[in-house]
Image 1: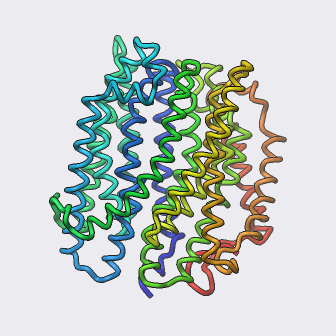
Image 2: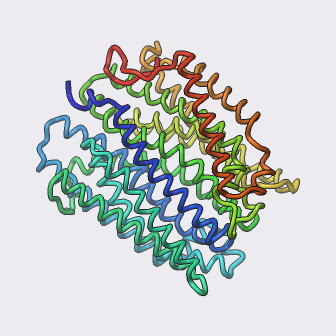
Image 3: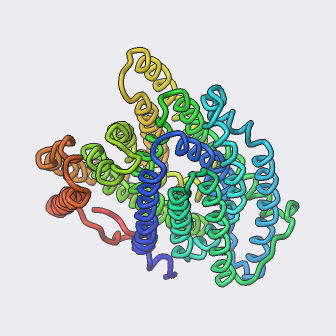
Length: 530
């Protein structure tokens, strides 16, 4: 039996989740540094816009399209027995074509930075003055990040295909360290200049690319960028990328529209959404992204080898595992939203109003966490079969549902003068994610109509009972939010750790008592949940 079958998804997921946890903890430290040193105001709003624009393109050229198209083709060639020389040649040709494309886009972004800011944050452009000028200046420093992170994503995809997950999972740590340093330098300047934040992104992208290039060469051997437009495998990857780019476009259109709408709301709205989104992304990254990272290479190999039952069992395990983690995390984030915000961010330039506003959007985002994790675990099952069109159609449907509900609700919210209209945008994201995940699951069930490998009812009942239990415990024992600002940061941190630790212990004990087990399936040696 080959190594990937013996190791299974559980061991790889544990490794990636552990390293991702380190990165996410540093990510929280980064957001704390931004909250205390920069605050939720004009400079932070401008930086988020300047960082978000190249990040949107990153989803087209890197994680969102290239990785999901490159890994199935690369894994297929590995399964077919292509030697190291052939695989290095494929790597070099993809790097050459990808590098040329993203270099041109990055150059265009630097030159036409005012247009991109006007397009993605028209509220800044209409107001003029400091927010617009800051965003344009920062964007000219952050846009080259697109080139660096696109090459980084390709190298990470190759390492993941070789089942070398550690280096790629550690890479975001470099980004967080760089941005923490940039926020600290911003606070140390006699007259703070936002440009240092943009340079922090530039340095982070360069460091990530250099770091993974070293590891990719050690695993795959020496390879160099080559122009490979006419190579059949490169063209196949590009053809597979087209529907994924369209699907990514649907998701990123949602992000852009949220930014556009938030730019017309109160100053700080973009920052409040960003801080709450970062907290929501902690469990999403540790569990959802980690599952997707290890699932895609394995599912691609299982499908290429014709091992259908193992393919279905592994996908079913990933879905159930994602639910087992995301449901209690969503409950905890919703109930403890304000205490979490106060514990992590209150102080410096981040005041009580910022805590309340960011907590409101965190609660809205939390409702969509199971859906977001579900997308991360279900989409690889389609990409592994090189079915790129189905997730695209579902993503477009989810986007339409999101804005059909969000736009009139936001207008009504603002017209009635209600607080925290930005939370409506977060709620729309949660709705879209839930619709997306449910649709993908229904389509996946067509491959396993009897539910033999993807049984959900009993596990979901057990998970639901355990999540309901910890919700009641948190509601009963968590102190009222009004008390949190009155105590010291240390007391808040210990109080929060006690709430989270006690709830986690109760949750896993309840799962155990209801018969929920993590074990190897009897038919496939793939992890499953009874």
